[in-house]
Image 1 (cartoon, rainbow, N blue to C red):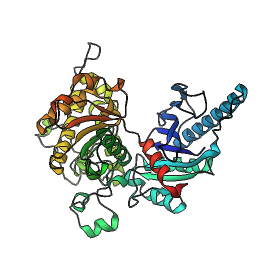
Image 2 (image 1 turned 90 degrees about the horizontal axis):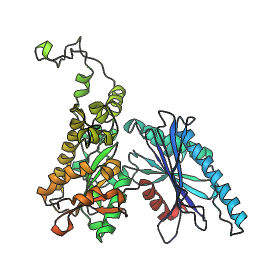
Image 3 (image 1 turned 135 degrees about the horizontal axis):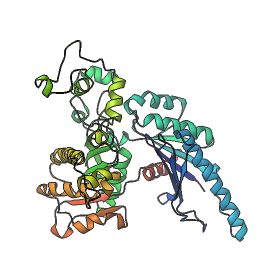
Image 4 (image 1 turned 180 degrees about the horizontal axis):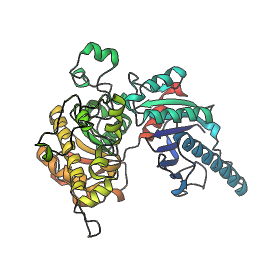
Length: 456
């Protein structure tokens, strides 16, 4: 049995899926695991067996445990490997006890470990981790401070714990390699831009690759002819215009900071905002005759780029607006269904409406970029897949562009429906579709790894 381990390291989480490679079919999902709240112990660890070929010890349920000792990504990865080894031993003993054919599930069968790496710079294809490629990714960490560092720590752990497996990096930036030059460029000196790699890279590429392939299959379209606007809305949020199966524009840029606001990211802001935000000028505009912005030498604060990036990446977004990174809480407080959920504070509505406004800005722009020739608007990501209210508000707004009205029952019933892609529009009306796609970045890595013969 040839196994693929797909690893997705977030800023404070670690999602892992184990797949069996099948030569003529898509990889088969064997089990999944997730570790959350790594940066704020106790971490929460889950381990779910989905399908071990030839074994009855499958569908074991979603078991969650609190793990106080998991304080970083390395220990979280090591904990998963230990759990996998124990499960493999239990599996072997169970099959021996029943007298059935022995079911093998050994760590040594993990041929490839696929790592999601957010920023790949000029890497546009998956690369095997060597000393050279490791240091290349390391140099890019400043451009994706919430993720590249975590990925590198897990890569190091994988090489240590699974020395006989090959580690391969899959880049979120790779899907956007076809961005037109005028879209990828910034209005700066291009000699400097080329030397320093200062351009739009785009992110969430593994998700968009999965969405493109899955939506094309669902609609019965050739992926190379598919035109969609995709919204990956989670704690990190972005939008992407896809024409002929390729990215022609996306909201994130040189780093994942630009574009839509997220749980802790500011999204697009005036570049000078950070200097005024950190200024020592008086904070009360009314007490100072309406003057709050100041460039006086004694008031201005020196802000280093590392400080600015830390503030804009970790202290902004929904966290700054509503005091929470849980978008579900924002929705409950902004649209209360009971007196217990009611809040007199408008900060929740502000956070919701601000995200909605920014989404509509990009949808409108990408509608024009695609010249209105669009098969579907697609929601994905944790918020996109689960927020009924956000989908409803976006759906109402885009009807003027020829998208079908949402079916209220279908929109509210997404979580209970089967399938990777779910249609939430009123199909009887005709017009452009509105879909939800249950994106799977680990599955996309496993699929890409499985079909590249050089990896086997």
